[in-house]
Length: 120
Image 1 (cartoon, rainbow, N blue to C red):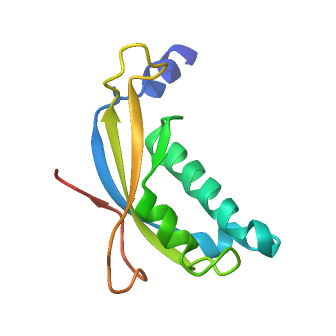
Image 2: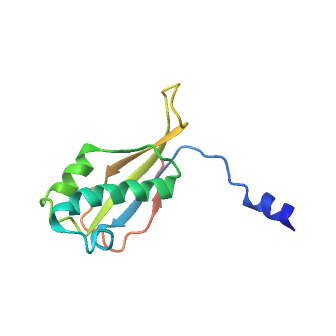
């Protein structure tokens, strides 16, 4: 029985992929003191990208950073639509083969959108 579990537990090889997600920042920064809300939101976006893409090297685009900080440190947007792109690391002496690039997606309303796989 344990041998069958090991075979079933094997993961597919990691490939470059791009997906769009909606991140609910409101529930992730709830209860955080005002002066730490925007920095916490950035950390939570990084944590979300690590979990979804399986890479510890997460790079956040400056436009996404500006959109999170657009209302100030206290008033973080409730939801943000992001595109997570797992890409090959071109640096030869890098620790990981892949990194995740997180960029914002402009949409009229972020409510009710599903996760979408994007063809590049």
